[in-house]
Length: 263
Figure: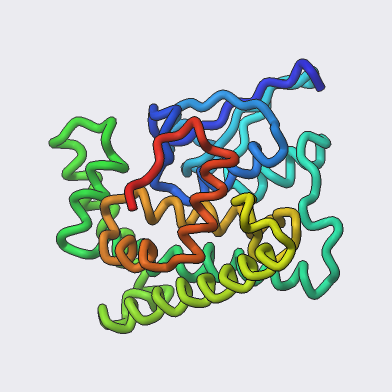
């Protein structure tokens, strides 16, 4: 489909930098794995079909389609044969494992991270000013306060807002350590196959090719490394050697044009 044009709206006008949203980088990594060309653009939640970042504008011979939600976008592009199914070769149990890893991050860790970024009295201002960077300051204060109250309500309803700070930290670190242990096993397998000395990428499920969960894991880890609104979690992640090896190799292979995080 040579007439296809894809624009990815990332929320920020920073075409050579990672953004703080794990879902943006997740989708971006998915596109790069398929070597599918795209144009990065800022966009805004106001213009997004679902009111959230990321979203795309896809121009084909059939017309222009706007779509939000990283999972729905991936499925739509696959239906047009612009992306292949990374999990097509997996067994049923491996597919379930892949889906479970994505859910662990997207449906659990995400909300603990939200609490750290938005509800912590110190982190709130860094998060607000980054997310609302395009909004004039007086209005930013008002909107930031609304978002804060909304997140308090959301997290309370989910149960995340009812835990103590210490309990939230323990839950977050439990997830990060589970990923670290899994990646350590995958790195060991790569070393056994002679791949480690070449600094090739290794993948979450231990295979020689990435699966869908790798895009989610890379999105969440890279987001944690570039965001300044979650310094405690960032410090913890930087101390996980297999995880850092995992994201560094992916960066070198697929995102070498991007400014890298500090370690």
